[in-house]
Image 1 (cartoon, rainbow, N blue to C red):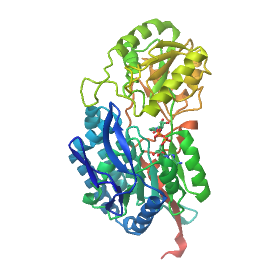
Image 2: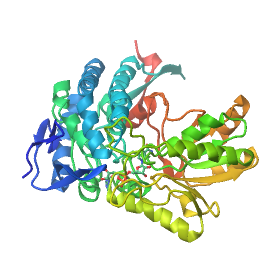
Image 3: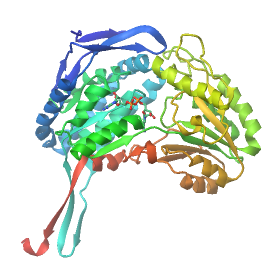
Image 4: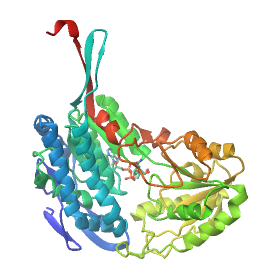
Amino acid sequence: MATERTDVDGVSVPTGHFIGGEHIPSETTFETRCPFDWDWKLADIARGTAATAHKAVTAAAEAFPIWSGYSVRDRAGCLNRLADLIEENKDDIATVECLDMAMLLESLKLRLVPRGALNFRNYADIIEAHEERVWSSKGTTNTVIRMPAGPAVIITPWNAPFMLSTWKVAPALASGNTVILKPAEWSPLSAAKLSDLINEAGFPKGTFNIVQGYGHDLGAALVADPRVKRLSFTGSPETARKIGHAAAENIVPFTAELGGKGPLMVFEDCDLEAAAKKAAGQFDDSGQVCLAGTRLLVQNGIMAPFLEKFHAFTDTHVMGDSRDSATTMTAMIHPEHFARVAGFVDRARANGDEIVRGGKVHKEGCLWYEPTLIRPKGNDSEVVQNEIFGPVLTIQGFDSEEEGIALANSTNYGLSGIVYTSSAERAERVGRAVRSGIVWVNCFLIRDLTAPFGGIGESGIGREGGDYALDFHADLKTLQIFEGSVS
Ligand code: NAD
């Protein structure tokens, strides 16, 4: 039997599931380790089963009539209190996520955990400001009503788990749906820490449940439960296909934010320094970012000076303890993932792709892979077409804008694109021509939370952010009343 709490570097973390407002231990557990010091076992965490899934969905189904009956003001009050509590506990959440996933502590404290709080605050504001659409037509008054749908299962990946899960949980709760969150098994600790704050925020018991464990048993049982009315997933296309089957079986709306293979386009007229720095910055989290610009597409006329600057910036990367402010490049999450990434490079070498830099482990036994740049033999090389999710970029040259756009659009993915140019006309033209859910011009990773977010093709189905996520979580109804019959 797992102890109910454990100490992770001075932070007390619950190790069980959080169901119906209670922390529940489990007889079986799984361990989580620190990527930048793999010998350091951080915690044994409850490992859920199909029975855990059933219990959590029951709690969420029983809480649904209560939570969906809350007024918008009361719902917003709970969301805002949770945001306050996240801010108050920012340092603890950042510490456990830093140790669990190796994200930089500073970035977690300054950016990602506050952004998690903002997700709840933002949706509190949106539901309070929402006005139903009402119009008159054909002698009737039409009103569009968002009805809460029921329990929502939210399944999240191991990268940036706190921020990613809160941006999915917040709109579900704001809609009046109850939630069962299953974080990924490689980084369970920040969700465990979040479970400490839910009762204090005032949510009725069973409104927001968190279960821990693996995807193939616990996750599969959650998504197959017919009492679940929404499935919201972030992760790989392989898992999305499985969850999509469960969604089809129960005819349940399903949204999937999946992988990416974003182009980072560098045009001759751009600020070369800024573009090269941003390109080298794609190694920051060891490339474990779905939105990363991993295919460098550089106009041939500036290839040599671009590479010179890119190498200079890449040389400045510091691999080390993620709590240390000097560290810029984090370790990879897990030895299995490390081996998967190294496998891509080994196959590229065998394929005759040119390894321009890197292509090896940083130091034997550690989870850092050297920042790697590959010039592929052709556009059909595996390293160009498949998501690697590691510190491995490809570089390809192009002459005309049309050629660059064709390369940018030449994979099955379409999550994000980055364009460096100083021409406003080109920014508009290329920005519109690149087929992806978001295109950043002369910037990266800035996003207004009310803007739509999602992918095209293998990068996903559906959109999150602002009203888009609220529409997904609601059963939309048109109420049409004949004007002549109402006195
Ligand atoms: P994954 O698909 O292996 O796992 C994601 C989650 O699904 C985990 O919680 C896992 O336990 C669960 N799962 C696995 N099998 C399941 C099943 N049969 N039923 C239900 N749940 C199941 O992905 P990962 O390796 O954790 O994450 C990396 C992937 O996520 C990359 O492809 C990355 O690009 C993508 N990602 C996308 C975004 C985005 O916003 N588009 C953000 C972050 C990560």
